[in-house]
Length: 515
Image (cartoon, rainbow, N blue to C red; front, top):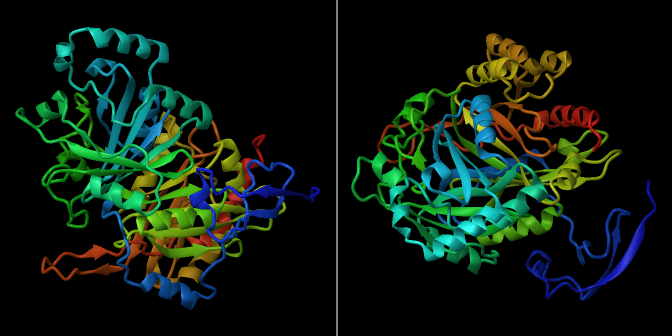
């Protein structure tokens, strides 16, 4: 092992990161740092995360609790916004790879001279891809428009970016992180109340509650007349990622059939969504509506350098509870591993797992992410489908013929030989065969079955990737007299039985890279 060094560093109580440090830390501490660390980035009195559960029974009890602790009133994921260098190219590649039609946009063609933004949708999965225009051109345009008549703005369909957008900050973000998530958007009852509650709970505030007015293109998609907008606000989540609260006036921003389990297909849902999902965007002319079957965002996973501090910070300002946790013994290989906590809203419709690296024979994939991303960030999104066989068949076709996303290397033959012994009759012989044919992994807990597969990193850096999942089981009828049958969130777990297989695949991939 490399030689160890020690530094005695003063208290950081006056710094902006003090809220993420345990209140009981002493004014000065001697802590161990690796040769790659310096006193400047060493955390004083760092408390390491420790699991709260030790046995499968304790973990089942953790999953079975009913919670009423949330502060921010989430209804579910709304969208995820990525910053990139070229929004059009990136958006259409994601569209082709994931079967998500480009349904709305804003750019120079709609009167927005600050950035280009494209919106993709499939069911309730919504992505934004935003790229800033030239800083020099934007500065010159702002100076000239300050003295010009702004009435011509009314002739454009969608002239305004989201309120928090800043062209210089967007360029800085992309220079630092490359293609990466800037905002995880969640729909809430009230964006103003959510922001105030989060800040009162210790969140570091970003853009305060701001009304986003309906643009001309959005109003036209409604058939003319006055259209309501929405309210957005943002707080810091981890790294340079913000948690964006979005709220709509009653009746706005909702599908005609809000219940995803009521029998409609993802294609039907996408076809019924005639409006852009944010009111500052204009509809894309002649947008196709066929999809690969993605239905909604199941969970959004962040990588952080300090799990204890990040979990404490996020859970405190959101009121989210811990619904699951995993250690390096659960998910690591001989060479590397991670610790992980799943933070969940009261309904568990919003799941925010957090990972930290652990030490092994070689560098953890989480550490590689933190280095390549230059800090904490969104590692991957798990996107839920109701038919993973159909979805992955289409994704593999797009990969082979159209330049779609490359999927992780298929597990070993031994993995599929052992799978029926692990899961028994929870799957049919035909399903086991299709899993093997398509390279899909499977796992189960005492509630249901999880089917999952991962892409390789989708950009130039080995950072962000996508997970496709299907959850089987955990059906129940809510006590509302509707007769509906719903699926309990988190059914089948998070693939604990597959973590080692996944880690090995990622380790093998990283061995081909100079990282």
